[in-house]
Every structure is written in structure tokens, then in C-alpha cells.
Image (cartoon, rainbow, N blue to C red):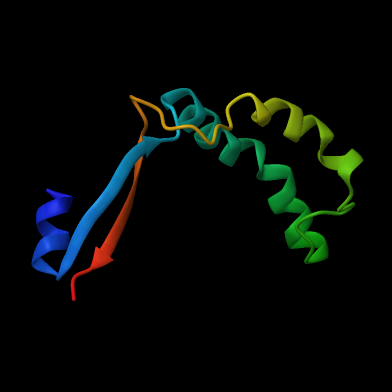
Length: 87
């Protein structure tokens, strides 16, 4: 479907791959709920992070790191396309 759309718009598909595993997607969705304290802090202080330091984000980084991947995923929930404009 996307290859046809790109062709119709004057592009050629160079490469594509799926990324962001289903488990990573679930973590992202749950992250919206876990972000509620940041929203409350933002409403009160106009700052998203009260302490923008590495130690303050250590727990979050440790938790999400195992879901982050730069490798393509067969059952990925998103797709990345590289296209080139035809001359």
C-alpha cells in the first residue's frame, strides 16, 4: 500500500522495516499513566522535570532500556520507510 502511494507521489521505495515491538508499545502506553505525577508537577511549577538530572531519571531509564532496540523487529508496531524522489 505505501509503496504504491510513494510511487504515485513520485518516489521510489528504497528500503523499509518494522520497529518498536509489541512489548515496547505496551510500555509506551503504560507510560502515559505513569507520567501523571509529571503532569501534576508541570501544572504546579510549569516544569516537566523538577530535577533534570541523570539520577532522577535512573529508574525510568533502567525500566525502558530493555525495550529499546535499534534492530528491526519482525512483529513491529511501526514501520520506517526510506524513499528516494525519482528524477
